[in-house]
Amino acid sequence: MKLEFNSVNELLNVGEESKLGNSPVVTIMGMKRTTSNFLPVSHDGEGNETYVDKIEGLLSRKDGVRAEFIARKQEGIERRGQMNLLRNKVNELAKKNEYADNKKIKKFIKEDDFNKQWKALFGRECVIPHNLCISCPNCSLFGGWNPDINSTKSRRKNRSKSQKTFSRVRNFDTYSIQKDDNCIVNDESVAGMKIGNQVAEDNSAATSSNFHYYEAVKSGVYFPFIVMIERATLFDVASYLKAIRWADNHGYGKYSARNGKFQTEVWALANGHPKFSILDILEKAEELDNIEYENFKDILTFEGTALLKDNQEDMEIEIRTEEDKQNKNIKSIEDLEDKFEDEFKKYFEALIK
Ligand SMILES: [Zn+2]
Image (cartoon, rainbow, N blue to C red; front, top):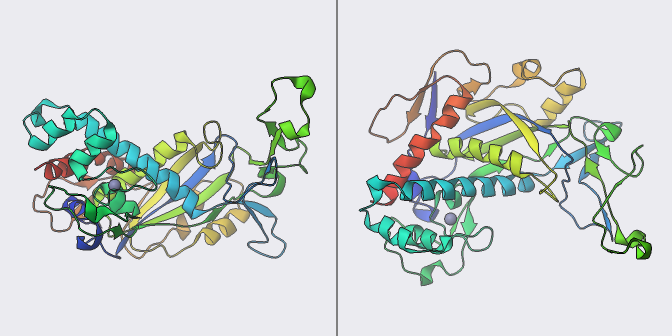
């Protein structure tokens, strides 16, 4: 069995010069579960009240109210997660003795501000969401647009001259498996809406407008997810898996300092498009008592080879156009996630050459 990825060197070319165009794709699929209150909010609130995104009658006319977790909100936090990971790794490797004589690293170390350090390596600062460098692996994966990239000079020989690059990540909107009172705490539920953020210091002067009322998705609510990465490298996929872990602990949605924590189980990682949708998972869940991988396994089919959560045999990873054939056998999704360190090092060394 084989999983196919593109070479990590492709990440050095982003934008229009990149060969990382459209399909084939690698699909990551799994189940997320809230471990705290979660406020998926993609619209304006009303006065001092916040309502979560929700949908009624999704699977049938009689289907109840489900929370909606839109693709853009998933991707937004995961993008920050991947960037955080890259910044930490760049910092970590740049301090290593083995790169101390490297010209680019010397320039990097000399800068005290992190944005300037980034500029030393990538030709531009990269600040999400409005000032992107269009040169780094984060921009390569999640895409971006920068209006004045031609006005800056870069010594990086591989740097793209293009101003924009398309996102290679395709998240899908998803919906809660639980419904109604089992899912959302609101003014009709026993507990009532949640109250927070008291504005007035003096309680005697507080009126109802000093309080902030909000709905929330309860903890223990399941959301299936599907993400497709077009023309994925092993670096993309391993870093995406790590970004999901970061996002789970950082928090998704509104007021994410305290809310929006998740636990994620990756159930499948596969070449090609999935042959099922989020709705198939929700429909299947209707007939089940437990939301467990085993209960959904029979519908997790893909166009190509899939590495499933309970995989037993070794799988070979094939990297296109990569010359060195290292031992890339993997057995589990965790093994694949662990490839990140090696892949990052390879990319980093190509970058500072
Ligand atoms: Zn960037």
